[in-house]
Length: 211
Image 1 (cartoon, helix red, strand yellow):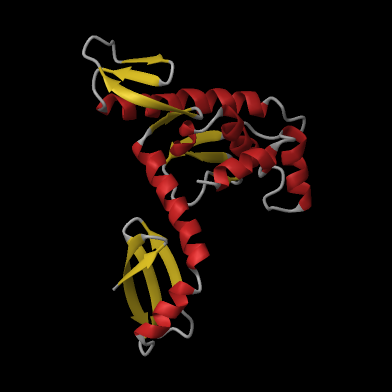
Image 2 (cartoon, rainbow, N blue to C red):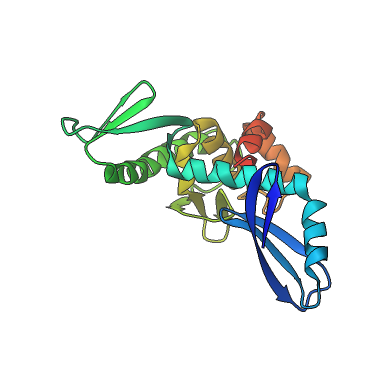
C-alpha cells in the first residue's frame, strides 16, 4: 500500500494485532500502522489522512536524524569531509575537515568523546557547591537517552552522539545527570539544581529535542 502526501509517496506497512486502537509511526522507509485484525483498508487510509500534519512532522524529524548520522558533525558544527592523502590524519579548515581516509572520522569522534566528556565533567562537577561524589564516567550509544545516572554506583553514562553537539548541550546533559546525585527524580527540587548550574538549560533541551 502506498499513499501520496504533499507530493511525496510513502510506503505503508500494516501490522495487524489484537488491538483496540490504531497506531502510527514514521520511519526512513515509510509509514508503519499497527491495527486490529479486522480493520479495513479504507479506515487505515482515513486514519493516515487525518494525521497528515503529524506524519509530516515525524518525517522531518526522521530525515533530520538521518542527515545528522550521515554527515560529519563535531561540537555543534557541520563539516564537509574531504579525503586528502597528504593530511596527517585530520585537519579542520573552515567548514571542511580533511582526512587521510573517512574511516578515521569515527576514530576521531570516539577519542574526542573520551577527551571532551571527561574535561567537561570536571568543569561541571566543580560548579556544584553541594557535597556529591565525583562519578565514574561511561560513554556509549544510547537509543533514547542523552545521559543516565546510577546513583548507587556513583556512575553516569553519556551518549556518544553528544560529541556532535556544542559544549552548551554537553554541559547541560552532564549537569542534569550530576543533579540526579542530589535528587534521583525529576521533581521541582531536581530542576532547581539544574537551573542553578545551567540557567539556560531550556535552550539546550530544545536543541536536543529537535533531533
